[in-house]
Image (cartoon, rainbow, N blue to C red; front, side, top):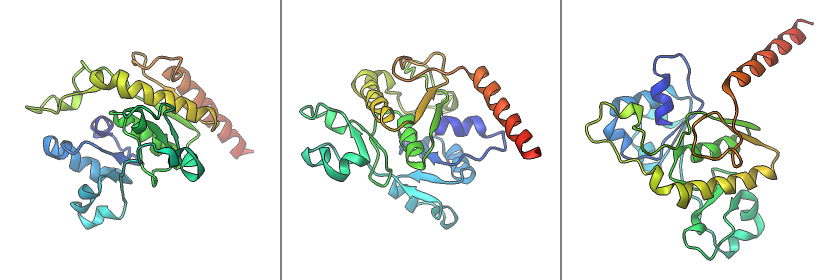
Length: 221
């Protein structure tokens, strides 16, 4: 995501994917956008953005597409296996809310890039997914927009109850039948812990260090 790229600029970390659905970001932050394209191992962008890339980058770029809005045919058969959808299909808004398990099928937009990344992580087969910095505070300025004269407005507060929260409720249902787990590392996130379980970063680091030590000991044996 854009914020993650900004935070990693002075490290040697190369993200597995750079995902961007914000068409204005490349104009507002061209240097950061170019850095993201160059640093990431893979890219997930809109088709027209991929068409503008240099040939060296297009080989590792995957086109984004939105999943189809819910209709009767999506509630049965193969479509049912590819995505978990909001149950209120009589609502026009709810018909575009869901969680895709296959990015080839398309993704559902919850008005936060983090939700797109969760669908991508599911598609890639990760069993444990940790969300970092998903505070969803619409009043906090994006730290990477400090030098931008007129950054894009943040709509998190506008969409939190109408799209973000309903989308994460669908995510919870999708996870309950898959055996996978999403953990929220933000201690101030607006997402309730009853919906997405909170995780303590210090405890996670200790557990990771313990797992690495155990693996090293087994390798030594």
